Image (cartoon, rainbow, N blue to C red; front, side, top):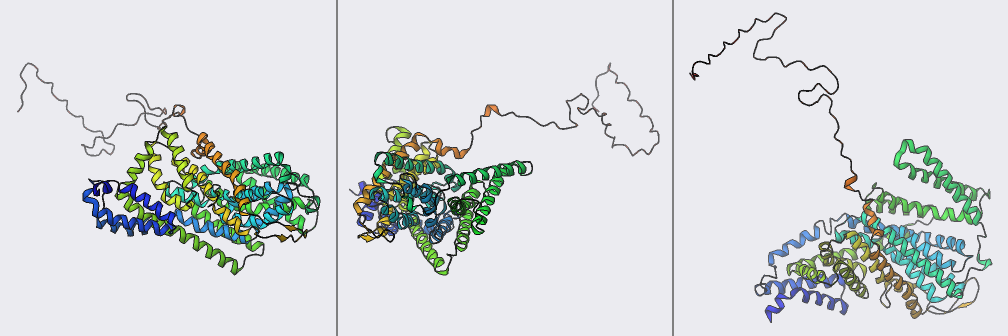
Length: 589
């Protein structure tokens, strides 16, 4: 019995960890306690393991290096997490989400399902600026849910689209999940961001397609805004003219700058066009010139600052100008500037943002420390080999492995948070994926899309909890219409999330079926057969015995350094050597 336990320590240790977490112990302490407990047991049972346990008491001396080494306390990659968290919370406090939802809602208001489209669009923008799911879901739940209920939206549709759009912050850069996945997989955060960009946009398009289908199949579930609610009036034509003028100015600036700026001319030209139309819109509004419609003014003034912040963060990372950590620092400064420009930056806002950032960063740090203690023991009992053999032996090869792993992560997401999945499960899956020849950036993006479902799973999805915390629990009187509005039940929130969980599962299948959505981060592959090797010619060199290739005169022979120097005098002729007498044998004296 003792030999059986010693030789199967890895599966027993993993199963006990699952039991500890199901009981309800905090994950960080469950990881650390489990690791230390089984370290003690493993040292005692090592003589009975037949060599499968490689634990000894001196191995505990490696823990301080694990804590303070490059994996935890000195990890520059994880430093991006507090920066992006701080940026997202400051932007949420600055009222950017409220302005975006109001403006985009007015823009899409005349069409059926317009508010739902606005929520998806703003969710994608908030994801690209904040990277924090909680901030996106709570902001949109507080702002857009009462408006959607006011104008007759189906409660399941409204709650589902708000929760799903908030979870786009999981997969659209600068996602915190992608930072953690890149760190655990040992890959570049910039490559992970570049690989996840297209899948994130495709998922946003699938959400939009679902709303379009629902607006056709069940038109009463998402009516258009009534005329009296469109406070910005009409003005789509004015907005289109402004966009066209921006494109013309950008192209003209590009042509002018191309000879001197080279590859940067397109970015500089677009920047000039956008800044110009932004300045014109502000001047038109402040000076009351009324050259543009109110709708065009508001859309330009509200949309361009977050887009500029997205470029400041993601653009500099993709162009190689800044690392993700530096991009996060610039984003945090940009968020403070935007809040100050809106007059909403105060000491209280900064205190709240710093407190929330410290809380989340500490949460991540403690989980990571617990994971290092667990992995020290788990690797000592050859748990990584057990997991690798278990996963690589799945039927179907690479496809079977991907399907099995995604089913496993999907089921574990019912109970575990995405940080817990990233720190516990991903380090066990990565070696098996690498051994099968799977690109780890593609694998990481695939897991990121899958982990996104952890926010939407009824009944444990965190996005559903966030929405439940801000949705009305009791009937209330609407402040504009004066009508009594029925509350949103927990069941309606759960059922509203189900279609979007199905869409996320479809997105997992699309990512597996079309890996080029992610693999484009490598750039265009080069065919070695098309490479033309040319050896540059070196002047003055020519084949032996041939005249110089450049047509110059032959060089003078080297001087005879065995003789004294000659200053113009005729050197005496050397006596000729006597001819050898070939009739006699050679003499060697």
